[in-house]
Length: 471
Ligand code: FCB
Image: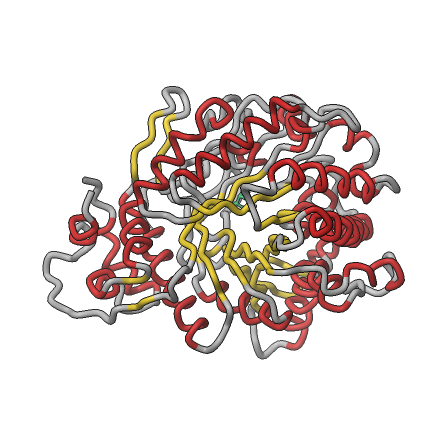
């Protein structure tokens, strides 16, 4: 499929407007992001399988065969190559590799070796996460990252994996979104172990994960001196609902501190963002332990101080009706699709002085109403940030193929490809063609730029019908 045909699909019929060509630095990574449990299928030995079996998924669904990667990840690797992508992020399922403490499953490691070789033979650079929300049931039973043995367990796992697969991968992500993992598992009850309102435990979990990250960081460098090790930081913009109200600004800034700053502070300063947690002594070993920062960024939420929300730190967190939004979850909106969140996240993370990769960004959007607009405008933001000197080296869209979306089940469709999970058939969405054209051009060719001349929602409104026409 030639890129010019692809681009023409996005031209409004009446458009004669010339856009500005936006070009990225040579070697910029254009990728997609995935996670083992969401795509592999057949993962029965981790804490998420138990959570699914207990009927905890809002839609009542289970991950099942997912995208069947354990048997055939290569089908999706072909699609990524054909789109012109040069990078892909995947995660390793710890429960497959170490099904019991200290027992290494060579078949599982071999399967991951084949996947990484498959990427390499297609000219696709991998970024590999060691922990993306799932871990073995035995580790959960030990108390997961709150247990005294967690550091030793995670460090040993990291060392084993990198000594066996390090010849095929250089970029390692220790943890995916420690803040989301802790908030959803211990405050909001949406992830296992399903606790609610347990803020102190969540913060302790984040600090413990920072220490585990530091131990893994050192263990990886011990076996692979030129490794690049980072983590994936989820970043949410908390917008004071009424900017002129001090209490709204205070609520937003408190949430920002608890959610965005917790893990970041441990790595940036070797300190807990919230005094009184683990104490600075142990966290000191996490200071500056990263070679890059992965940024996962999706949404903005509005925050209003509210006496009626005492259990949520007096904060009413909501998504206004009139903002661009993807599809709704089973019980609530997913959040605002907000290209500006990328800039806020990059500007904050750049203070650590390390290279940045956007490791996740996307929107649940089965009909591709809004995804093309989001992609183009996020890429514009990134180009501007690079122009201002920010060291952003890659953009990984979440995700290639619709997959199992954690507590929501199969309803939220984030893929550049639509998936029929029963037949495993993939159908490219228009946004897949768009993103492929962008990757092939290493930026926004002027025709694409002209389709969305303005990042505002109203501009998106006009351009959207053209983009929604499938071929
Ligand atoms: C992120 C997760 C990822 C996926 C996207 C939609 O928080 O890291 O696995 O679920 O959200």
